[in-house]
Length: 237
Length: 227
Image 1: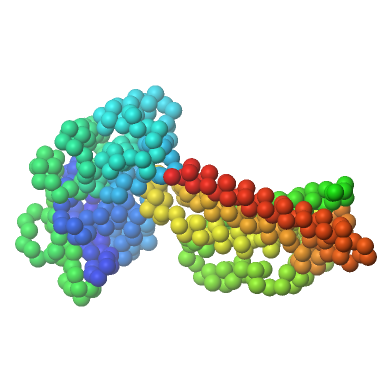
Image 2 (image 1 turned 180 degrees about the vertical axis):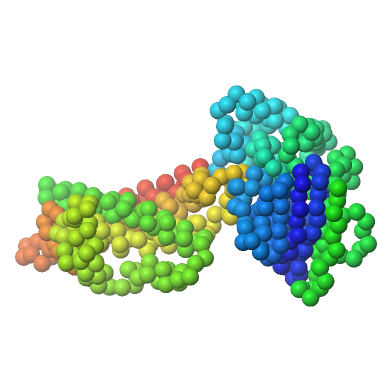
């Protein structure tokens, strides 16, 4: 994955700005709640339009305010595990899981479906509606849906293991690691958990207020409006 | 007791109202979506235009239709020449009048339910690779289904009761444009027609009641389905 971005967007009271370049298969994103991690993910996914700047992924321009480019989310080949799951309430779990597959009848798709469903222990839930699932069950279904989508370029995971017990955490992490190692799909992985950061490795992006003297990389949140100097951001490789 | 003539009036009214609602559904749906989700210049004007039939005297709407779709108007001539659609003094014209009158109510109801659809779910569908058209049909419409059903019932009730626009646009012709409301009016104008008027009035009350009960049942079923 090679992701380059230099974007800024007005966010609530302040200005959120980020500039970075990542050349790693996986990038862990950390930072305090409200620092802008989700905003950053949504800009990469195309669900939030930056006010200015550019985002390039593997040489493809996803967004460029100067060139007037803003690729639609469905054309970015970027999958998401949203912080709030976003399962479709009018579909059962099975239909939710297959929503992102256009080859859902193929043998390969069926084999992969079984593998992911088994690993995340979703077999007994396939006919249930999301409303009847517990928080952890929804989380597992949302993760399975994104993994089964097999986005070609990038998978954005916004705290994907929240609400999962230790055993299922382990199973889910194993799946994510296998996906990272076996395919060329890049990953952005938001987490608060230090063990996850250590285990996953790769690049590390810290989202937080500027000027905190953080080494390695950071994405800044400048509070106070446009006049605040843009935070310095560093390339991570 | 009901007579054969009453049944044919009933059948004509149902045919006109159904054609009106089915014909108005696609444009109503598109307008509701546009007004709920898209920002564009002239939106306020479009909103006002859509709601015009709700606040204008129906007779004026009928008169406008006559001017726009009548035999002297280019649009009317085109409809007849290109599609073979004759409107003047025909039940099809009555359906157009009823459809135009039903449109604002249908748009309102559907717009409210589109407003209520969680856009985060639509975004999730797009991030899963779905085109805007697929998002619309597989996420937005099913989630807005109760409102769409309500729009159909409201529109149907409005179309069934249509009077002013119909009589001004396509006149009051037995067997062709004389729907329930027009037949009741005609019976009241005829000496000794009170019996007919009473029968038709009771009939229209029963139909309206059945439509309301049916819609409530459908909406409940839809809610169960959605949750």
